[in-house]
View 1 (tube, one colour):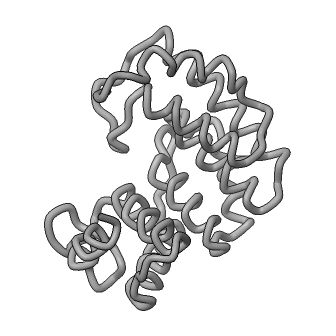
View 2: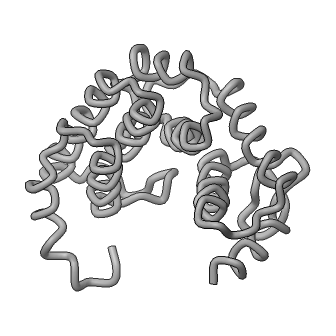
Length: 195
């Protein structure tokens, strides 16, 4: 299935390294990070991903970070791209610190905050990573009581954010997230297939 998915994703890659939903095109930064993450994870598990296609995907993410517009609320695409780049050892530490120190409170979703935290942890900056994971946990608490978003640019849900924050915090070794508390929140949904 992974090999079939790789064969399906690669023809949707544009010459600049970006990905389209149905054909080779660019424009959706979050989708670029998502497809690049898939290819990165596939490679790390020994699946064949053409080097040129992978290099173009990483170059695209770096370029998108370099030219990303400023934001007061948002940043889901930036956080995801930085995480993918950090896992590949291709992120710039200056970018990670800038987004944590200057834009940390502007990330709009718990998952985005946790993704930036995981990227920082991958580069050994546990203090900043824990700060971002702490923000993610506070945002999850807020989401448990307030539902103010019906549609999200990152295709996210409260359930996915909770699971993602937990997974990233565990992977990064962060104690800034109460894993037992948020795991208990996921337990009632374990048998359901949607959400």
